[in-house]
Length: 94
Image (cartoon, rainbow, N blue to C red; front, side):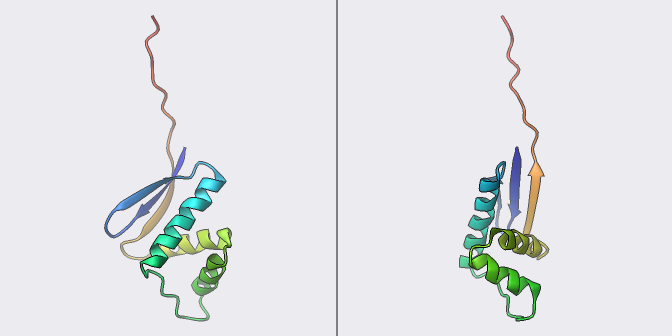
């Protein structure tokens, strides 16, 4: 299983990203959530960040994921994808 960990200023959030659809959905959720909170200030018209942001707002999932990973270098904010091993319950055979 693969998870996305968003390390935010106030709390961490965890998302199942074990499929491409779940991965895109998790990044889209974070993008929308953080954008609604005013976290994005892409004021330099020449920046790569602004170009990615514009493509992401138009629905480009590849640009959205690149933008979010680019943002993970900021203070109080981190995004990490992590593989979690699958554990199976060990049942006693009778």
